[in-house]
Amino acid sequence: MVNAGKQLMVGLGVLLLSSVLAISCYAMDYPDEVEIDVLANLYEAVVFDHAMHVDLTEGCADCHHHTTGTPVLNEYCAKCHDGKEEMDWVSCQDCHSAGPVSAENLNNPKTDFIYHNDKPNLKAAYHLNCIGCHQEVGGPTGCEDCHAKTEAGDEFYRSGEFTPKKSADSSGH
Amino acid sequence: MGKITRRKFLAGSAAGGAALMLTPAQKALAAGSFEGFPEGMGVLVDLTRCVGCRTCEAACNVEQKLPEPALPFDDTSVFDEIKHGQKRRTTDKAYTIVNRYEPEGADPIYRKIQCNHCNEPACLTSCFVNAYKKTPEGAVIYNEKVCVGCRNCMIACPFHIPAYTYHSVLNPVIKKCIFCYDTRLKEGRPPACVESCPQQVMTFGKRNDLMKIAHDRIKKNPGKYVNHVYGEKEVGGTGWFYLSNVPFEEAGFDTDLPNKPIIDNVKDFLAIVPMVLTIWPALFTGFHLLATKGKSHGHGDDHSHDEQEGHGK
Image (cartoon, rainbow over all chains, first blue to last red):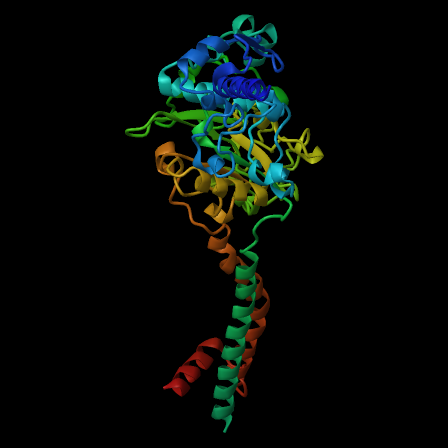
């Protein structure tokens, strides 16, 4: 009885350990595709091939900072985030707010703000992360390489059917 | 005895005059150290983030209801435009523009140009009809109805920002970025260009807070930035200031600007002008009366001159 109980315990322990190890690597249930549409206005939503980027990048931390339980590269962040702890929130919009980031955060005494007082807004977080890496590895960097312009976008940028007609009155000095 | 009294009088008046001259000059120097309104807003522009998409130009055009541009805002051929040997500048139809620079041995860098909303604006001090105003919110605005179109501000501005409606025959006026004061800043909202930027090149906030963030970014990203915040000190400090990863002169900035406000060049002189106008007439009338004391003025001019010269010798 005692032996059987011990074996069961060990067995369970091993099972638990292995599952923890598995999760801490890639086992998190990540989506193969993410449709980024929360900010779509001037451009169509982006269908992001997450699976391909998982294959291409060295680790989750390349994009997800410390939240997926892998070590961070930035030594400033690493002072607190040793990368061992996996967070409940991993998607970009869990931390990066859509609205403009206020410099007032600088004076907010909460820990969240003392160290995260210069956090980019959601749109910037996407673009800085994507374009920043794409510039380094030679990925596409043009606006419409990732998302097609909407009609509202054409009107805003005076492109497409809203392209200015050549007028005699060329721009002044 | 008489002579000694006169000498004493002259020495005393000279010393008094010098003291008077110094007082307003010192006041003027003290006034030059104005460092902006404490609650004034500003924008931190991080050039390392800009990718030259020109979205800010489009947003400005919509917000300020500017006329249709010559080319679409997603047309990047404008970065190659050279007019009169210069890259693009702000115009009466575009209050903000982005230019591309190609520093040696580095990737191209894009620089957004607009009014920098100086703490002590040269345009304001050059304006003799008082059309300009630096608001407590930090914007340098102007009253178009007062503007007489003299273009002094265009010459005074160290950043070449104010533009002119040359095409207007009857009432040409100055046009420039006003920090979206009327439509946004007044209500505490960031200007349209800042809000539209997909890369958050610009961060809006109190100037004092942003300056801390700027220095923090330099500190927390060793090797990324040039250790200088352009606009922290230049021309007495500007409301909009820049971070860069290449030396600022390579991104088209004028790095020869003084750290003192432009008006400091003339402040001492201008402070003396009213004193000269009020004190000098009385002072020299006194000298004249003393010098001619006891001398008769009844004779002919020629005769009296001869007499005076004779006395002098």
